[in-house]
Image 1: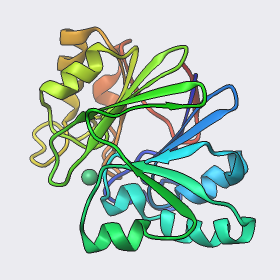
Image 2 (image 1 turned 90 degrees about the vertical axis):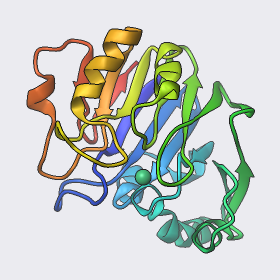
Image 3 (image 1 turned 90 degrees about the horizontal axis):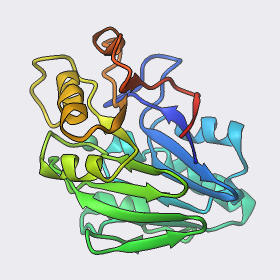
Length: 229
Ligand SMILES: [Zn+2]
């Protein structure tokens, strides 16, 4: 399994070099795009043909995880192609604006859903965020957990304990008060579960790299880098 970081910043990008959340997971011919925030579409186009994407999964519908789906429709029109989009059921004006479109075939998921998409299996874990957010466990020849956005909670640990790698929203500065995990929570997750952490959702210009230096179990992810899991 391979994981490419298309964007790691939130809630807005870091100047010209940083994009918001977007992750490409590949095994064999199966490609799943998880989240599609600001700046992700252009980077995805540099890596692969949109027609070869097996499905998109949206952890939640905040703008910094979804906004590039809007211009993506124009590209899908040009390609005359429809994409499968998986996310939870949300009855809000924004969910309708974002997802009700002829180029998206939308399927709803919850904690009871088990999906097989090509060579990859997906199951979902409800997290704690101001809007509904499901983390996902993607299983291929390795097990990759992705938290989406969340504070520290039991389901973060449940997901971590089933994962070889956890791509986690745990990069906020120590003392951060808000609906994300601060960097010290990454250490706690490692201590409690033994998972390897890939730390993401970085506040622009406030990198957690220095805090993680010297800890082999935690990687502060780099944009446009592909990790062979
Ligand atoms: Zn969010």
